[in-house]
Length: 234
Ligand SMILES: C[S@@+](CC[C@H](N)C(=O)[O-])C[C@H]1O[C@@H](n2cnc3c(N)ncnc32)[C@H](O)[C@@H]1O
Image (cartoon, rainbow, N blue to C red; front, top):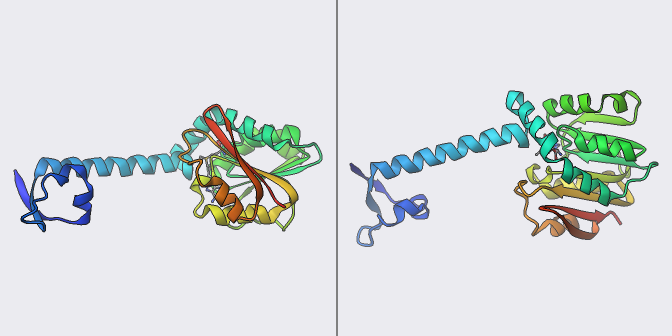
């Protein structure tokens, strides 16, 4: 079964439609209903998958968000460990982590730094990170806050160091978020942005983003399949 449809830019871009576009009648085509169904179902499946992944990992919320937190605590710990190693945290330093998720990097940082502050926009992740870091929170070495990197609730020049692991690629505006990180860091401080190979973040353009936010000495370091961008606030 076939039906006539107006050819739009969308149809021109979809491979299964392209052979149906007739040069003599460039405005319409007879498209088999099976093709239309196939494309519609694929688009719907892709959109549902994207929503599930966002709910689990990007903006963890509800049951799926809690499951995502459990997965991330296992899969991202190696990346967090190498990012923290690059940061060379000292025992008298203060560190901020933006987008801490289930809090595995916060735990590692709290073992090395004088004080660790975390900020995340997900209440579910705050609950998991609080459980994971309960004794350090109780003793005052760790503070976890709810909020966004777009508007950090901290004074200028507060932290010696800052990190984000698998988070910057989700921020609504990466350069604006990095400018906020720059603002709250002390002069001479180091920022480290870690990414696993499944983060969806490209290596290309990372240094440009850091430089656009005001950082200098930006470089990308590879570790296994993971990578980390390190830079300094002058
Ligand atoms: C993919 S998870 C990574 C979590 C953790 N860093 C890890 O590596 O396992 C991304 C985290 O960033 C947080 N996040 C995303 N956008 C944010 C924003 N604009 N401000 C603060 N946190 C954000 C999410 O809530 C989530 O916890």
